[in-house]
Length: 368
Image (cartoon, rainbow, N blue to C red; front, side, top):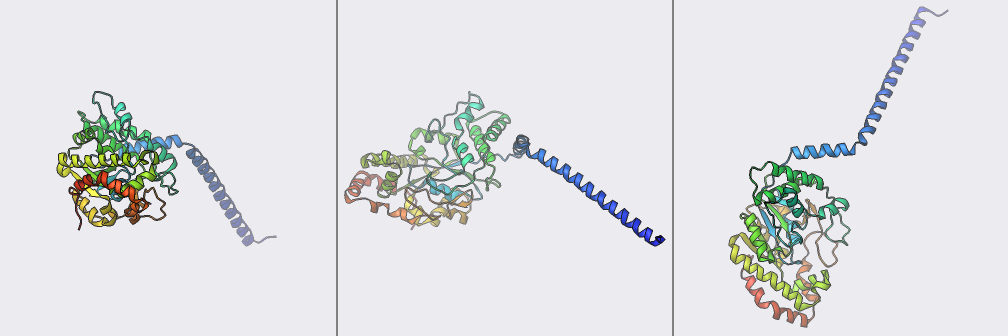
């Protein structure tokens, strides 16, 4: 016969066991419900996208800064300069070539204010964001270095239309402000979105070579700026030739295009004065800090060391060059491409471009 003491002990153990079993059962049921809830939630991708778009639309920061356009003939350092501006706290840096031109990127878009906003968006929309959002961004097709570019085109369109819905009367500048606001707001992993910005910087080759383009540009952005880089034609030709042999294979034809770019710089500088800055590509490479300090003053932004490092979305990026490159940063080898040419080619280039090059050099910013 068990003693009263033993019975009480057995009863305590039984109650404890029942309590533990209850905790376990409750935890199981709670965990089972949690698993069911999460499974259901993970399947709601469309709902999540809808919520994400709603949050983005509710927290839009208008991008109304003027545009500092970088433009001249290809292979002259436009990509490099654009990458140097990337990440500056007072700059909205367009992350790759700006392609708002319609139907070609080097044609400044003509906006007819009598047409509906959907038409304006269709004109300005940059198709390349679809490719970059799907496959990531890389500077050259053969480059193995890829950067994530998280961008929602459908969100961009919604932001663009919502922005204009709130405007009392729409001007050309409003349309471009709406586009820039929508672009930088739909770029979800933009590391430099927050903060007061004084300029948007963007590179589009050849756009500044057409007189009418500049007239339309400064009509939209009277407070805008144009930066054009001139590259020694003897260094420019090997890079252009290697980049697109069919287009630049004939030295006479290639130098004619270089001349067109150089002459447009003289025309733009004469017409638009202090809103235009001409810089030697060779100075940008060999005297990077003095040049970027000068350009920071030109844009009225504070100098920051980020201006000395080529980046994509604040991450270091390799040069966009026609030649093989392994390292990040600025390549001094670009200063000696002329060594790949023969004496006859060098003499021909000098004859065809020497006079124009000297005229442009008189207008470029100087760095001793």
